[in-house]
Each structure stands twice: as structure tokens, then as C-alpha cells.
Image (tube, rainbow, N blue to C red; front, side, top):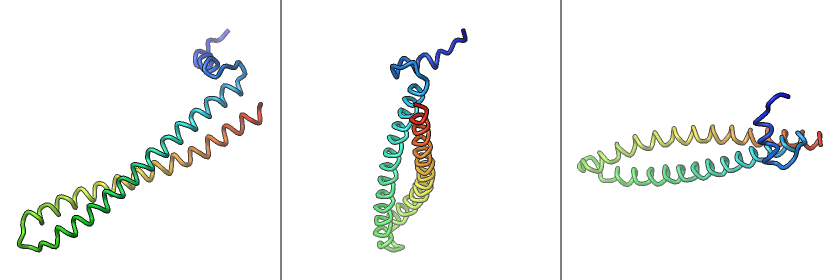
Amino acid sequence: MVARPNIDHLKELCGSNQLQHCFKYLFVQEWRENEDLIRYIGEKCANLEASIERRAQLMQEGESFGPFHDVALDAVECMAVTQQREQHMLVALRGVLELAREGRTEKEHHVGLMDLKG
């Protein structure tokens, strides 16, 4: 008999010896993890968007001091660097969010297939 430790572990976790139940259990768990990731990244995107907006307002206020206030202008330059980096981070996170949303559809399809097999 062939050893299948991963399948055996999955059977133990889901409480069934039927493969369709085991794989449905696995796919539902992966779907839940994916949903948690979507929520988490969505929250991080919202927080980053708020930070970018606040910083933009702060930069605008800092620029209002004019060219005669070196500290304000230096601070605005520093914030501009951070602003650009965080905008790039937001684009990257949105890409990950899109991939995770695609994973949602994929996992729903996998769970549906196991329902058809059951």
C-alpha cells in the first residue's frame, strides 16, 4: 500500500474517509484563508489611502510657508519621497487584492466541483 501521509492527515482533519469530503474541506479552508487575506489587504489599502490623503494635505500646508522657510520646504521634500513610495505600495497591494479576488472565484468553483462529486 502506498503511503499518503498528507491525504491521511486531511482525512483526519475533516473527519471523513471520502476523498470528495476531504478535498471540499481543504478548498473551503483555503477559501476562508483567502477571504481573510482579502479583508486584511482591503483594510491596509484603505489605511494607506487615508495616509496618502492626509500627507497630501500636510504637504500642501507645508508649501504655504513659501520659499523663505527652509524647514517646511525640506519636510515637504521628505514627505514627497514617502508619498511616492506609499503610492507604489498601494498599487502593489491593489494588484495582490485583485489576485486574491480571482482566487475567491477559483475556490468557489473548486468547492462546487466537490459538491457535484458528492
